[in-house]
Length: 350
Ligand SMILES: [Zn+2]
Image (tube, rainbow, N blue to C red; front, side, top):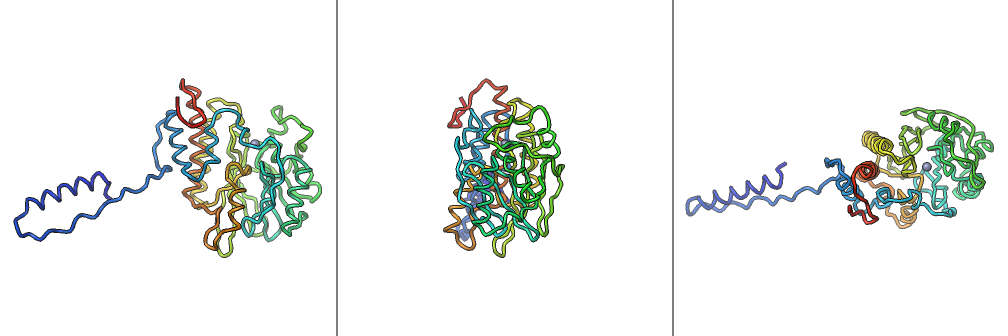
């Protein structure tokens, strides 16, 4: 395809030729107008400067991915999460995927031919009761069908209800080997009265492992450093006759030691997971915090959806842009440690 600049140059030469032609020569049709293709931010080369990373993240976020763009804001990374949480209405999001979480933190139930795989367990046994168990029942699902509990990472807002549910339903708790070790080591989160206990070691998985229950498999990738062994997930979802692949970036906030190495590691993990998602044709963005994937807004939009348009099916380009925002904000933070500049909340570099 001709570039716009090249086509413009050719067009000028063409006009000059016509003018030089003999009188009476039929006037040829005008050259077709060339509309430059819209810029796809995911194909851009981004210079390694703070300003360029912020601009790339903002461009990648476009008008639809503002939740994840909050990663570029300075300050407390937990500030985007509500201080006090309440149960969100449970919802059937796909034919085989249900939201049974809070307004600040998610739990997802993936139904299979052999039972339920639960993804994350909220803060505490109480939330597991009021949001997960009650939510499943509201959706006419039986909590006793929970066979596996995938805990994306070793923070209490994701494992808090795990041991309670595992004990009650004889379900297996699945976490990365690295995060089991993290929870057994000196850097484990401190026990808090409002949070559930650290679960006992269950299945330990490694990068690229699959968890299969009945007709459904989840692919799991180890994507540090939100925690040392944060798991990010890829799995199939169904919408009537349509099958889609969903990607869940398992640890989003920059809650780790804010040093250069960690930000660089985060960006590399985000980029690598984007490659995995592209290979698998992922077209659905999920998170374990609805502030990032706008899950509650999309759940609301499900009520007025048309048969051919599902609000969670945003396509591979949006998936790539989502991961690019995460990566570029991490790279911006890495540069901010070495560049004498400040990022202000508007994203303007000073
Ligand atoms: Zn976390």
